[in-house]
Image 1 (spheres, rainbow, N blue to C red):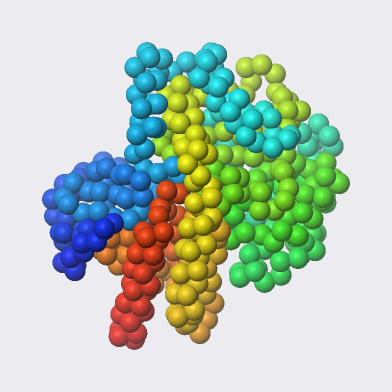
Image 2 (tube, helix red, strand yellow; image 1 turned 45 degrees about the vertical axis):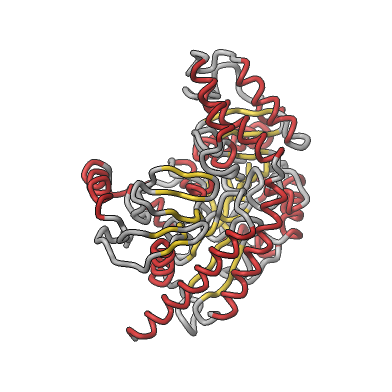
Length: 461
């Protein structure tokens, strides 16, 4: 059952620090008309996030219109890698809008040319063709299309299987949800494509066997022959849990794909552009995929995503047959180019690595203190997943995760609602501009609210 945070204003302790301010009841009574209007006119599916009505955001902080200020541990769902409200991005957007060119479909434009060249130059060989799109889901649909087309061309129509991983999240559209590994999200499909199969993800937590042999056994158990596999797609780290696969596993997967003419796709929508402490998440594995999908942090603001891959894969379809209405929207291109420059020129990849090490050290200490309730902390760089469990078991505890996130919001640290492992993973992903002082302060708050949430649980038992 999906959960929602209460709109009932609650008196909470006042907070006033260098980075946080809580000066009203939460949510502020004055914000209720906005929350109620959204509930009245938007579908129920849009609900579920903490009731903070964003007014503006700067750097690693979010402000409402009522005097409250949060350290942002969400990046607006991993979007604002270069930081919120960056003047350089705003100026680029304004300049492009004032130029008079707001859209041009697939007709050529200089700004689109500059962006695809910039992306292709940054990416390693052989990822030298770039297809600009709008959302991560759209890029995954494209990767599926490219993989299947390549498979059929190489091995006939039976070579159409797309292998992905359990608990994976690749988007909300038909194909991306079939590639996803969360059964409840695709019950609505009813007639699912039998050419999509999932295998356990080797996180070492829910799947203790992290050997590549287990991957092969899992395929065999489902009657899948390697000769019929067109593509393998996986998130560079699993979005719901922030879990990475072992390096050896990934390198054996790369070799297996090469040996069977199978395309390997890394979904970098959440991982790319410095999030994990490297410019690209797949760098942690010492390999290069055949296809990559990107979004979110590429622009730190406006909707822009892209697919990058080997030229012979990207060029499979004839002119005019693989397009999108808002491909390379010029205003979005301006935002993306400015954001990439900030990530590179300000050393934000290195900051992600350095502050990420501190973040994970502090989270590990909290996890050790409360090991009966926190099973593991996964992730690298400035992304982490803290897995909440019921004491004495490995069963997910979504109630504890929700309580931690609500208490954090009330104390001035903002995260999005629980994800992964039955809604029991607390996801942490601050903008890459976060400072050491802000990491120390926010992790101290987190440690305190975890203790409070567990104590409240025990007092009710």
